[in-house]
Picture (spheres, rainbow, N blue to C red):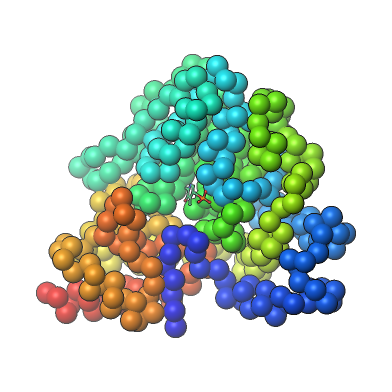
Length: 359
Ligand SMILES: *Cc1c(COP(=O)(O)O)cnc(C)c1O
C-alpha cells in the first residue's frame, strides 16, 4: 500500500482516478475523451454546471456569490485579488502568517499603494503563534483584509474567522473542502486545486457579487472576476480536463458524507500525528497548539542527522513525500481529504518503530 503525503500536487481519491482511467478514451458514450470535446458542447457545459452546483452544495455557498473555475493556480489570485477588488491608490490589510501570506503580500505591493501587514507570526512560550485578532493593527479604510487560514509550508492555521468590518479575502488553497466554512463571512475565497480539489493549474474562486463591480477595468481579462462570472468561467478555454476531474472529486466528497464527514476524518488523522509527536522526545512540532494545522503537519527529528534515513525507510514502506519544505526543513505530512485514516495510522506506526530503533 502506498500513502502519498505530498503537500501538492497531492493524493487524489483512488476511485476518482480509476473512473477517469475507465472513461479516458470514451466519455459519456461519445467515443472520444473529455479532453477532446469543445467546452461549449452542451454535454461539457452540463458537467461544468453540475460541478459548480456540487461545490455550492458542499460548502453551502449563498446565492449572492459567484463560483469561478479559473487558471493559474492559487498564485494567480495573489495579483488578481488586488487588481479586481482594490483601486490603485487603495490601502489593503494582510495578515502575515507564513510563507504563502508573505508571497501574497509582496505581489499585492505591485498593484496597490499601501499594503499594511496587520500582524505576523511570533515566538511565544507555547510555540509559534498568530497574535490574537484584537492585537492586529487594522487600517481604518482598507479595501479588504487578506489572510491564509492554513499555511501549507509552515503548518500554521487560524481556526477562527477574523471579525472585521471590511471584506475578507482568504487563500484556502490547502484547506478548502476540509471542513465546513461560513462562506457568508467572506468577500472572496480562492484556492489552487492541487491540494483538495484536483489537478494543478486549475483554481476556484468564490466571490460575493457586489465585489465583482469594483475595479475590473485594470485587470488582465483572463483573471477578471467580473468577465469570468459573466461568461461562466469560459471567457477563454478553461482547463477542461482539470474541471472534469474536480467534478468527480466533488461527487466523491458528496458520497463520502460531505465536508462534515471530512472534518471528522481530518481531525482524527491530525490527532494521531500530533499525539505521536507530543508523546515523544524524539520528534517535535514547534507550532502553538491553537495554531496547529490539521492539513499540513511539520515535524522535526531531534537529531537531524537521521533525516535521510527516516525518509528512505519511510519510502521503503510506501510512505512517500514526507520531506519538509526547504524553508522549514525536517518532515511534513500533508493529510488532505483523500488521505485515509489508515495512512495516518501507518505513518505513526512507522514513526514509533523508527524512534525505538534509534533510542
Ligand atoms: C499551494 C499553495 C499556493 C500556490 O498554488 P499554485 O497553484 O502553485 O499557484 C498558494 N497558497 C497556498 C496556501 C498554497 O498552499
